[in-house]
Image 1 (spheres, one colour):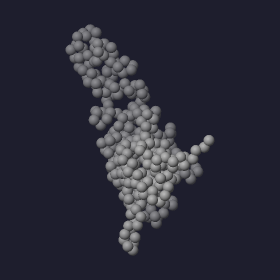
Image 2: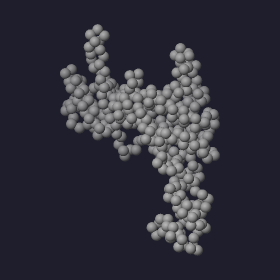
Image 3: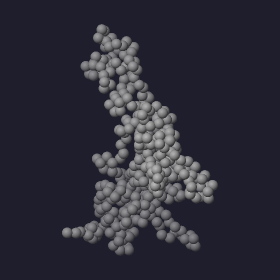
Image 4: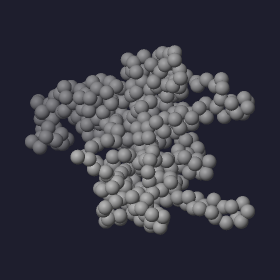
Amino acid sequence: MSVDYYAYLAEQKACPEKVNECGLASGFVDRCLVWFCSDDEAKNNARRCYMKRASGLENLSLPPDLNLDADFSRLPDPSWVGIEVEFTLLSPWYSKDDRPFHVLDNPVRKDRVFGVPFMSAASWKGLLRWACRMQAGLFDYLVEHGMKVDGWKDPAWIIHLFGNERDESEEFSRGALIFYPTWFSKVGFEVINPHSRKSRAGTQPIYYEVVPAGTEGTLRLLYAPLPGDINNDKVNPVEVITNLLDGITALLETYGISAKRTAGWGTAKVNTKGSWLEKSAGTDDEKEYIQPEGKFKSLMDESGYPIEILLDENGKLLSKTQFKKLADRKPDCTNTDFESFKNWYQKCGDEYKRRLTGSGDKEGLSKTVKRSFKSLAELKRILEDRPEGGAR
């Protein structure tokens, strides 16, 4: 038994009352298309119906239970760095969908299963490589060589991050960066109306389905060099990530990430109050993690919890008065030492336990939290202070 899907849809009501739950993947879109193709008079009605319903969807999103977004909460290697840049679009974003049939000539790119607009990982990689090349001097090179890219050689840090071009046959490198798609939650519409040079009147409006200005998105990258890559490529991770961040900023705020960038589409503002770096330490509002003094370690067990004699019946650290009452049962520390230990444990105890259970004595980047875009100096210090055996 076989079913002609579009013949079946043609028998249904042309404009359904309910848009499919996952977004704009099928169902409603297909019915509008069948309506669009039924006769010439129906074309504009079908297009208007689609545009009205699509622009009315306030939150297109992936099913949360699937957990498809990248999670940098546990990185398996202390030399890896998770980067997360939150941004807000200042102008419309557009990338043409690969759907073969649609009521619009220029639908925005959406996931085939869930109908959520997105920018692919491959698009991010290509645009960011180009932005980094511009940071490395590609523009001056083009000016000096008649706008020809022949002979341009990527510097070592770009090859280290992005790998070689596809046609590279010898010493091929995949690059240390892993890219993830960016999902958007809204769609809107822009109209371009070409004018006749003779009459100076509009001819036929061209509709573009876009992600509208004001929509937020997140760029997620994972810096994951293979063992030995840093030494083989002869690069410094601090300089590499510094250059990468400069390229990200230039791409988002200057060049743009959309098709029709020459028309100003796809520029964005980096949300500096959002997160960009996932690394081992506290948040910007927290004080910097401090290693325990040697005498503090004798007051904790192997898992990083205070020894039992220092806890009250509720499992909390004793007060100053309670500690004094221990008299001869006190551990080998003074009242002042205990107060210092108590202050340190309240601020840094949880992080100390996580480091013990997560990556032993390694204080690299295995446990991650969000960081502000302005904390580049702190990132440099973290990378430079990594334990021996980590990439340098």
